[in-house]
Amino acid sequence: MVRGSIEEGLAFLAPGLILSGKFLQPILFGWRSWLDTKVDGRVGARSVFSKEECVGMARPEGFVNLILFVVFVALSSAGECQVNIEKYRGEEQTRGVHGNLELDVSWRTGNVDVFELGGASSIFVSGEQVTALFLGSGELGWESGSRFSNAALGHARLAFQVSDRVLPEVFVQGDYDRARLLTGRGLVGGGLRLGVVVVEQAQVWWGTALMLEYESLDLPVGAIHKAESTVVRWSNYLSAKVLFHPQVALDWVVYVQPQIRHFEDFRVLNDWSLSVKANGLIALVTTIKARYDRRPPDDIKRLDAKWRTGVRVSF
Image 1 (spheres, rainbow, N blue to C red):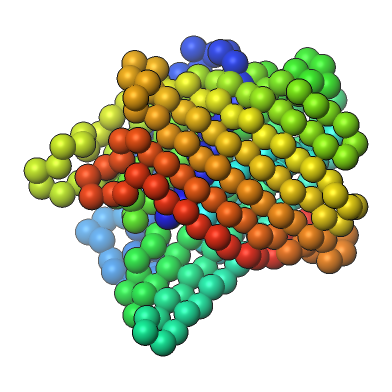
Image 2: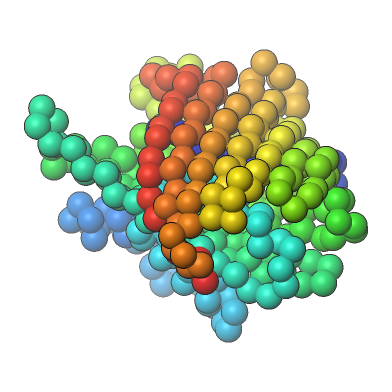
């Protein structure tokens, strides 16, 4: 599966933000338990959201509830296990609250019966000096009646506008991907986002960031890869957005993320997205993604690619 590394950001800001991603595991495992129960009919020994596990956890209220609801809708509708943040940046120049909901369905029958559901949602809150972005995505797939794909992601980001072309950022993310043996992943980091070309019809941005990444894998017996790891990665990206017509836009981004201590351990994501607006609210979106992991888990291929078409609703 294609997984986009959404861990962009830019420059080296915030070593103090580097916390362990393990705090995101209860959320990820809770979502997976819900899917096992509701979708596959499996019931685990105990839910990670049981009363005992939730003691001392703060209850979100007000606007936080709204954010969690939108992210939950995205995860429930399922979508790409990682999403490209750059294509949501168009609302950055507009003050207020904006959002998107993307849904796609694919079905194949004959020699093989495959059915996939996907989706992603975002909320963009833009103020005078600070912009907040909340994203959620997920994916479910069945082949001949058996589920083969199960992935979800949640991402939150704050950007602080120093000028029109300089934006320090901090971010946090949690995700899992059953097809890649990833049972839980959490990261936190920060950096700078710099505008190279910023005009009405086209934008080019370059970013760099440091992030702490925690991963937990469900590996086979005798695997060489570590079941758990905590590393610091240097995340870099180059993105471009071209507006060919008021109704037609092309978004492109490439991410390169080497591990700080072992540069030969790196990940690359290339993402192309073409959107055609049907009207002010609805657009048809075609996306091509390719992901390369230099050191994937055991029995997982280095290169993944995916093409998909769906509908985006903006509000």
